[in-house]
Image 1: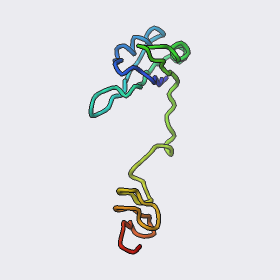
Image 2: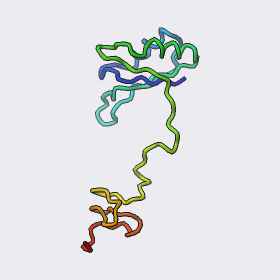
Image 3: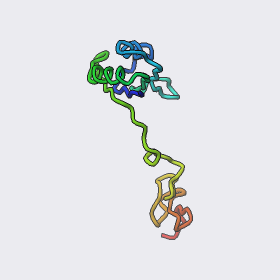
Length: 124
């Protein structure tokens, strides 16, 4: 079972998180999510446990626990349905600076499909 762990202290490391969950059973993997530029924790992570009973017990016991002064959130991780993921590559309403989407073009490179990508063309 994949388990989401949120509101983690910025200083927590994967070894610390693993140790907390190993008290409830075997842990397959641990990942503290970090910012790709700074390497700093984003304050959440995931723990994978293969035994669902042990995972559910860990969720029950650790959800709301205090770690380094912070109350953590622990629950079963559910994957987002494919249709709900944000994508900045499928923007049909234009884009660019000031994002467009209206018939006037909406800034640099904005606009919608009806005015062929628009922008401010001096028509208004």
